[in-house]
Length: 133
Image 1: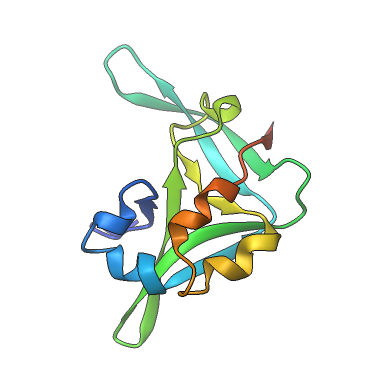
Image 2: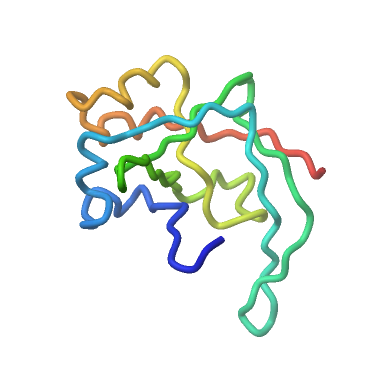
């Protein structure tokens, strides 16, 4: 991506960061997806990470996923970031982060500014199905 372009924000800190806190309160969005893809990040002896296999990852038993994001307007164009969180332990070997994914039954609440985002975090889907592709 372009230098300086933000594509992810940490769920743990977004509410406190000046860049994201207004969006955390009132500009939350959802990105529908059947799955997401992640390349395995393999730690090397020198501390760097080598890219390994590519995986298709989706919440177990879900046909449609809702990736949580935040947006802001820049020159009348919405710009968004996807919120990330520590991974479910079963996929931590792939990457040290994963998207914040909510089930459909609380998706409407995520985009409702009258609902505090913190109240919905406990609904995040954890258990993932994953397949190397």
